[in-house]
Image (cartoon, rainbow, N blue to C red; front, side, top):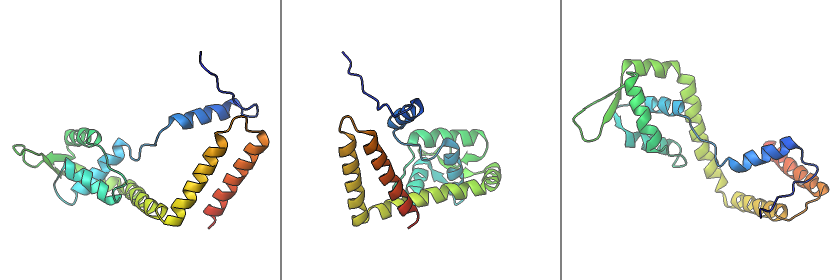
Length: 179
């Protein structure tokens, strides 16, 4: 027999749906396929590269915090080749190296602002992780997470307690934003 979870009376349907969606959503994808294609064009503008080298270039940009999978890199290299944006440098080589074509240069030029935003996002990720690893910040995050999870794992949390928790989190967020 399945045990049914009780939802507090004060939680409306939209709130419950939002919470369920948040629990199911593991992690937002850092970059979509079009972002990856623009990044590859950006790196190929500096010279020919293999797919693996492009993966490493993205990793380096984010200081190791994001690494696109081969499953997104190689199909997009094929697509860019079909779009005539890139070409294989030596078709007989064991590993294909790709170079930028004129159509790729045009595409890159037309999307310069997008490329800057993507690069900024990856650079910010590296900075975020670096700052998050400051020992005092790590400890404070750990303490908050532990305390919040400990309190929220208790059954039958009263509406007053929920209000206190929400107010404390919102207050902390506001103080952090204004720091």
